[in-house]
Length: 247
Ligand SMILES: Nc1ncnc2c1ncn2[C@@H]1O[C@H](COP(=O)(O)OP(=O)(O)OP(=O)(O)O)[C@@H](O)[C@H]1O
Ligand SMILES: [Mg+2]
Image (tube, rainbow, N blue to C red; front, side, top):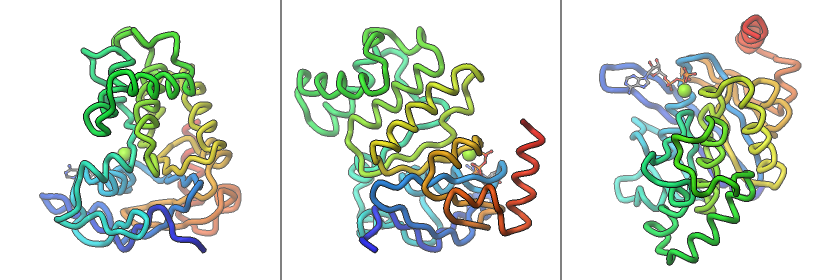
């Protein structure tokens, strides 16, 4: 096996206040792979992603990006974040900046590109998420699905080695979910390396190469996407039947 893009080893997170949210999570993400993380609310999925992107400090464990440990005091957080993209449930766009400027911001300030270089890259990625027609709009005038596609374009623009998606469709009205899932599916088909936390089990099964099921801060089952059709553990069986009842 070649070296993974991302390797998580025995990750723990104990929040101030004592909640032990992540309890010894390990998994690898290989080049071109899409890994879906599923699990009930509070199982620690977002905490894992936030640790990977250095938004919070893990309490213990090792996170490696192409073999290099990134959760050390000496690691450059900005460099890590420019190599690991993140797309949030709540989009996190700058309301006072037009679509184009939301996408060029990181290219200019982190990558040091000129305005015209950054705009060329921005227009290319906005085309990939089908948002070229709204480059001059402000986020407040976009639908939730459009905002999320801009947030995806912003992440793509930095050419990250892996993109983390934290429930990218759960803030959207049902009729807007499809376009965002379609965009992510396209990126997976192009071979982008990604980790997707999602409650959309059918999407995870169709798009992910591998599924990691988390329960109570631990990986309770992991395998090819077929594990959601044929779960081995009782916990995953129960989780999937509770999801079916919801839908
Ligand atoms: N900043 C925080 N301080 C203290 N506890 C926290 C903090 N953030 C999360 N937690 C707790 O850590 C646990 C895991 O939370 P996390 O957000 O990672 O779960 P999740 O699997 O992403 O859930 P959801 O599906 O609802 O998004 C929960 O018990 C949560 O209450
Ligand atoms: Mg979460």
